[in-house]
Amino acid sequence: MGVLMVIFGVFVMVLCMCTAVLRRNEMRYRKKGLPPGTMGWPVFGETTEFLKQGPNFMKNQRARYGSFFKSHILGCPTVVSMDPELNRYILMNEAKGLVPGYPQSMLDILGKCNIAAVHGSTHKQMRGALLALISPTMIRQQLLPKIDEFMRAFLSNWDNQVINIQDRTKEMAFLSSLKQIASAESSSVAQQFMPEFFKLVLGTLSLPIDLPGTNYRRGFQARQNILKILGQLIEKRRDSEESHKDMLGYLMRNDDNNRHKLSDDEIIDQIITILYSGYETVSTTSMMAVKYLHDHPTVLEELRKEHMGIRERKRADEPIEWNDLKSMRFTRAVIFETSRLATIVNGVLRKTTQDMELNGYVIPKGWRIYVYTREINYDPFLYPDPLAFNPWRWMDKGLESQNYFLIFGGGTRQCPGKELGIAEISTFLHYFVTRYRWEEVGGEKLMKFPRVEAPNGLHIRVSSY
Image (tube, rainbow, N blue to C red; front, side, top):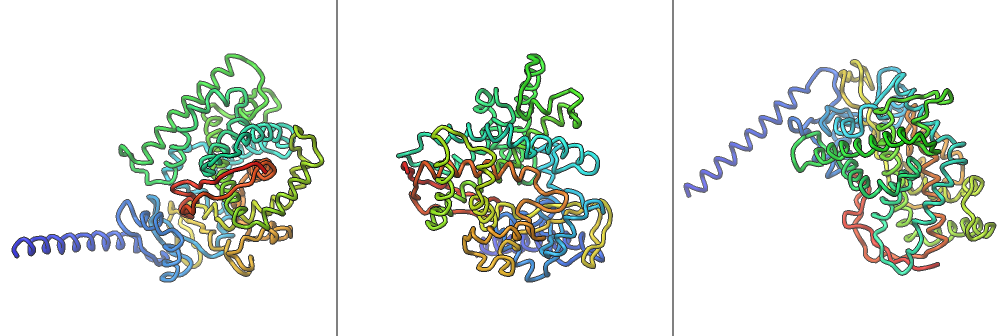
């Protein structure tokens, strides 16, 4: 009996201490003018609930506090905005002090020169350098031939195999980007580079706690290893003085035609940014497109018809060209509908550079604003029958140009690599649907938040078409 009383006493004491800590943390952020909401635990805040519950956490908080509330996620005091009109205002007004506000873990691991982190004149310089690499002219003349050559080889000999399409699309997205960045060396550095890159990706969405075994520590160490790989690659190229017609070659040019000259550190962060931003979108959209096409035979039939029509106009070994890519209207619709329904991107972060009034509240300097765009993808006014996979809705060009089309970001920060990513996914789908048919091996679980992924893989049995 005495032991039970001691255990009960300890339990009550711990409960009281936890309550006191939570209350003290709430009082710390109970400033006049702040939106309603809860802040959770010191340091950790509500990160665990946010990452585990995802959309349900957001819906519960909105039900309690409305569409504009405070929280503490990913190590930062944060205001969450779920209001479409306000979200658009936030994204369109970087000049008024709403600059990129990515979590510390992402800044540390992707580098302080990455395009998502900088603003003002630095952002203009970095964005200019990036756009010069992925302009429509560059895609047509330099990148599309590399993408086609890679996809043709990567998608060979898949028949009569059971494959994990999640792993394959991850490899595809990384290796395709690496070939565009460093064509000559991509094969020799890929084996060393790829596992480090995958660790880097995991570390970007974690609490910035630098302890052994944490995703943050592994991601930061992976960055250091990648810096060495890329630094050695740049050094070798300078020593050889050989001309290279790839992204790294263009970034390293010192002639007068290069209007956006970058330092070596900026070049390396630019390369990491290109790999990172394209990897997540291309790999996940490709995997989910394969999933949705399997589940919707009518859509697959229409897509295959479009691609078979292109192949009939070509010799067996003739590559995809710019005009072929522009003719893939239904493929583009499939990509947009996949991105919408799977919600590959849930939102974007901004940071206040001064105390700022928004929606009738005062947001302190240095706070993050999470522009949560997930809900708008399921708005029945914009997308009738929003839970249906219906690519035909995108055949009307007006939907792509409407104000709330935020699948690829918004405002001054719309993804500069949008068309390059679409080119990669389209070429992947072209060779996949014209060469193979497939069926799912088992009903494996899909997670939709914080990343779209299949924890145990997504296995399909592939056979020749």
